[in-house]
Image (cartoon, helix red, strand yellow):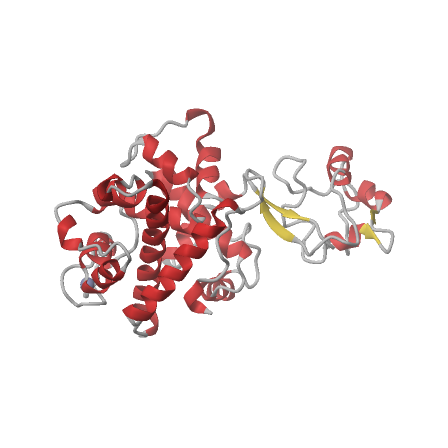
Amino acid sequence: MEDLNLALLAKLGWQFCTNNDCLWVQMLKVKYCKLQHFFEVQSSSTDSWLWKRILKSKELLSKGMCMIVGDGTNIDIWKDPWVPFIPGFRPFPGGDHGLGSNLVSDLIIKPAWVWNSAKLHSFFYPLQVDGILKIQISPNQSLDRWAWIHNSNGVFSVKSAYLKDQEARFSYDGPLPKNVWKVLWNSHLHERYKVLIWKLCWDILPVRGVICRRFHIVDTSCPFCGANVESAKHLFMECKFSKLLWMGSRWSLRMDAFSHLSLMDWLYIIPINGSGLHLAKDDALHFLHFAAVLMDMVWFSRNKLVFDKVDTDPKELLLTIERLSLEHLKAKNGVSRPPDLHPLST
Ligand SMILES: [Zn+2]
């Protein structure tokens, strides 16, 4: 359980490092990383709950996060991991400590776009120089960017982080059967939706009913309807807001019919396995995408209401969900990459 949580937290850490457009990332960077690099920051007792947990993921992230050199102007030679061919991906000073040079671009001779071999040998030990020389550079390369080296497409995934963390002792004993996880992970859902379903299965989505188990909070009610304790089951299966969306879908689901199921049972029988609705294969795949997008949108709308005091019209939301689920379904043969921004935040 803790290991799974760690892989999920690493997803947040990845987003923190790679997604500067995101508001929560900008806020955290201003607050905690103004003076220090993410990989250098130490946890403090006054840190926020979220930040403490993101920092916990640093160790796991450092096992696979590495910068891909473009023009080298955004990579700190000494603080960023940028040499995938050496342990830890960070070279350490071996010669004159590279005084006065802090950016990888300082190590590149332009316009020839070749490594400055003399500088490399004066800064680093020979084995590290060998590793750096394996990195290909060219004037046509794009900007420096982060990559997760355990995925061929360079994009972080919770699955690969978890496997990396577990490596030799990977065996699954979670709330859903292993074959169901396999279906989920092998599906073409965006990573964000897989992570959301995973959180729901482990009951770690921070709804008020989960938060109040650890912290004293006065209001534990559902932000949409004001009734009940806000549990994940209530939010996604029982709340009138979600019910309208399920009912308005092309499958016209009456969620009252599933009230006897736990959220986990429902996730297994309906969206993931598809057996509960007796759908044809293609339709079951469409429904899986629809259900994932719906839950993501409900969670996003809920947060907009809680944090920004902005209401969402369920009818308009339903149109967005239908459009997005179809788009994701059509793109299922393409590269699966979570959108940088939430579709409703633009
Ligand atoms: Zn409600």
